[in-house]
Length: 205
Image (cartoon, rainbow, N blue to C red):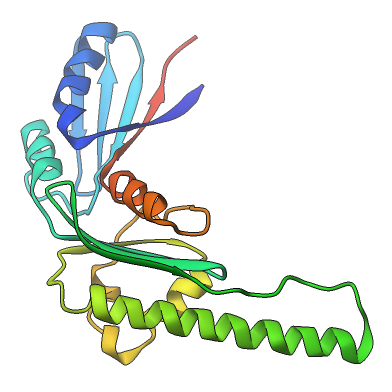
């Protein structure tokens, strides 16, 4: 059975050692996007390279890659809220979160339903416009190395279409984070989740 775990960058080297200690001699198959560990007992672990590509195709290269310091931007957008933050060395340097009320759906029909739909669409546009202004203020001037996004994909795409953010789509990298309406703690946790290394582990029964 395959299970997916997340490992902090500072723990990856020790986790790789531990995989060998638990499962026997390990062969490494390294590509720019993934590192596959095949152990003596048949266990397999596939490490997804964060912020690909990996330039030095060795285990040591992977460890150095995940530990490299980057200016990380995080953009979270949902109908009910938004957040933007700049991280470096695991620390939050600058951030802003906010919320906008967007009306829920209604069971009413006819003109009433159409009126609610128009109001909801207008509220959503206002929420995304507010999120865009925060992204322009926090992320655009931050000289980011990488940007990780989360929330609602269509909402994020809407924000990143703004011409003032034209340099950001090129540095967007996975993962796309599933988050609740962004509050400060949600944004801070998203910064940690963006850096975590995803590993798929398949162990024989």
